[in-house]
Image (cartoon, rainbow, N blue to C red; front, side, top):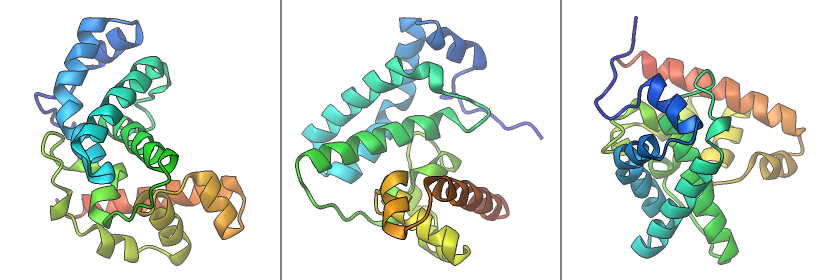
Length: 184
C-alpha cells in the first residue's frame, strides 16, 4: 500500500535537487518544516530566542549534511527532527543546563507518524508504549530519546558495546513502528 503524501512533503525529485545544492528546493524544505522543527527545539530549550538559534544552526547542518540523508533508512522529517533535537541538546550541554523533558516532547523518532506541521505528540501514549518493550530495548530508548543521551553515553552508562546500543535502538524502533502501525 502506497503512503499518501501530505502537501508539505517533498518529492524525491525535490530531495535530489537539494542534494545537488538547489537553494530554491531547500527554501521549500525550510518553509514546509521550519514550524514543526522549531516546536521540537522550543520544547527542549524552552526559550524562543534559543530555539530560533537552534533552528538556524540545525538548518545549516541539514544543508551541509543533506547528502547523508538516506530515504531507505527513514523519513526526511525524522532525520531533520533528530538533527534539531541533537543541536538543541548540544546547546543545553554547552550552557551546562540540566534538562528534564517529558517523554512525549522528546520522542522525535516516531514523530513523523503525526501530522508534520502540528507535531501533536501529546496524543501519543509514548510512555505506555515504551514501557511495553523488552527491558533491554526500553532502557536504551529511554536513555537515547527520552533523556537525551547519545549512543556513546548510553553504551558507557549501561556498560555495553556501542554496537549493542545501536542494535537495540533499531530493534526497539521497529517494534514501536509495529505497535503504532496497529493503531491505524
